[in-house]
Length: 516
Image 1: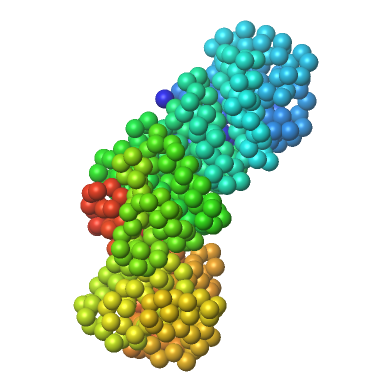
Image 2: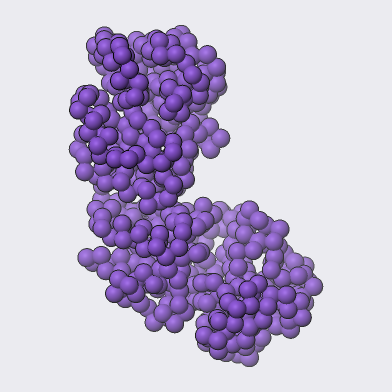
């Protein structure tokens, strides 16, 4: 079983003990003592901290990292060896030492002698690259395993893009020996979580965001709750939300909450995929080439909804007629033998949110004037829904050419965004990211445009009440939050991807709790 170890990187023994206490309460399965972070690492301090953790019944990893591989200070080799020897004597289960330093004259002999004295302690032989992936990860692994077969090999590199993660996951999947391998940084986050599914020896978390000992460490509470650590195993099915950015998405909380309620062996992940069509294609092709990852499907958000449709078209997969007509897909399902399908649930989500919030039927929208702000994937879905309901739609966008292209495609009008001030529409729908956290002061529509008969609908749902909605409400307009659209599209999307109905009341409760 993969161990969830929490890295303690405090400057004093007292603060380290506080972090240890919090980590134990939050579900740590082992503690890594980053002794190099202490103001002055001493043998007595190392021994006391090891004993403090051992008294709580958890395994201890003692680390005094060299500055060249992420250590907090340039401590001499002799001092580091003395500190780690004191940790072994106090009962540490593992000590971590860098491969590059292991090769220095005399070091291997001293470490070997110390480990022979404390036979219950095992060596973790590590290598780190803070600049990018290793030139040849497999070759590096073989060299380390050959030099010290009894050690746990640890390989950690920096991912510049999520597509850099597959090499680490391949090695973890292929090797049967005790192995630690993952990618640092936000782009490498999934490798930390999926270590358990792929049989890694251990992975690292932090006590809280502010106390991360390395880039991309996830708080232990988040690992245990949001990412369902205790439920993960090799059979866990994977789902995700693809976007850039994607950290704000509610999808992981919603899906994982529903998986919990249904007792489903599944996990939903945020998947930040930078770049355009080429990078999107490479990510999904990499997933399809690795059926052992058990990815079953994805939600897709900005800026990849058109890329999703194009990818499924290129793969010869099924295109839902509505998604094909919209020209954008927010749902990609992976079926039998890697067959892919594309759907759009934004359209039904938007129309249902609008009509149900207003308490009207779709036919009552006929001949209403509607202003759609934006020309991206969300706008395409909203325009199709409004046109099908009989609305007279005008597309407003900062780049007029994009609005004109969209209007020509769907048979509606186009106008530059500055003309929104003279707009006489009743329904205003923001399909841009303006107003999304953290840029919550932005709005695409001046406050004076709204009146008591207006309807303001924002597809942004973080925050729950955007400036766009707040100013519309102050003018007496009726408002529809992006959360209402998200909830309704999520119900349909969950059904497409999993084949079962979610608990809509639970889904709504999770969304509202997260947003409030």
